[in-house]
Length: 360
Image (cartoon, rainbow, N blue to C red):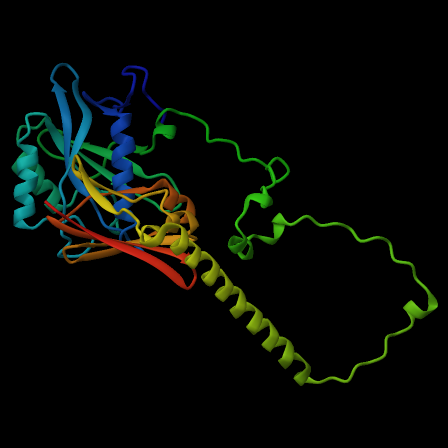
């Protein structure tokens, strides 16, 4: 569909042709809601968990009914019946409490289940129970691993929701604004990496393409060099000493990294060198999990893992070296007690970990 933001700066205008209703969707809401949808999508392998909640804003009734969406409230799910957004009775009560907000204008959820993107029985029941007036809308967002999420609003027509959305749209700011994707640079335009600034322990992971190739000088041929070389006796035993040497060199290198890096941290920082400063702080409906980006273990780490235990739900969030140095992760809790455990891999054989509990 063609982007339509001219009528409301900062908003995406969704209006199916020939319909007497429209939705003005805040682009800020798109950014934040998309991040939450993708967090749920990545929480469960293969399919992904669905998330949902209540849309907030205002409704202007007139010749064209305009629903303005400028915020949302997440309502958690314990996923007792799998990754779909099926709410237990206590969770339905939380959804009803959120819908009781005077600014509530509808309901939303992500859609990771098989089949067409349509409202399920539980969605229709929720809309009839929470929003019986008729002006509120429902939003479904379909996330994908390799392309932009797709979305669609559902609006009652003659008191009934349609089987499918009358107008689907890409759920990302760039496509909504009609902006072109940034051009990819060719391999000739990319700047070579500065290998002098790299730490020695990372060099084993450098791609071969990073190394410069120098053409050898043209060899001088003589009769002796053109003569076939003498044949060496074939024996598999020749390779055994070489294999043993390589094995010992690898073990020695790993040991050397461990004894030089970790004792150095102990000597310079003492016990402080192994502290990560892990903490969880409430931020609206989400938790911001932070750690000390300047901690010696974080600065020296090759990678890390953030392990989350939220009621019966357990998940691991892999962190590369760059993400570790950012120092934070945002998480939406499902229960009043969540445990976070950060594991930092200083070397392949040496880890530093720290645990923190958040309780509502």
